[in-house]
Picture 1: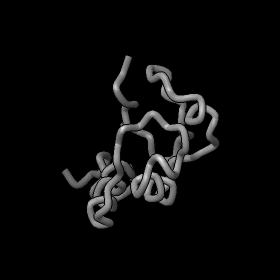
Picture 2: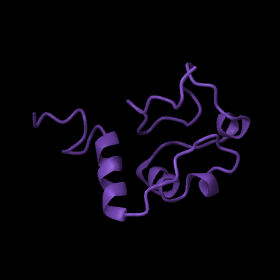
Picture 3: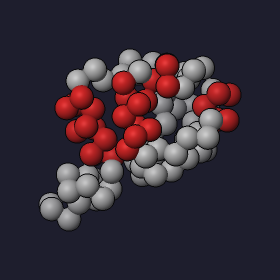
Picture 4: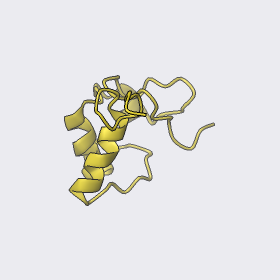
Length: 86
């Protein structure tokens, strides 16, 4: 069992859909698409954004750091993991 779901290729996908991870009932039934806005809101306070989540992630209070993390997850962003820059 995984400690947390793999975040690779999560951007733009529905939450609770990684088969190898045992999601909480609330997360599995949530109708969330991981867009930039959803990731920002989740990143501020995961437990408030998704009540009932098993996530132990406390969130990222610094907006700049949150933005960097979201940019990394976005495959279309210049600094994203699929960037042709490297």
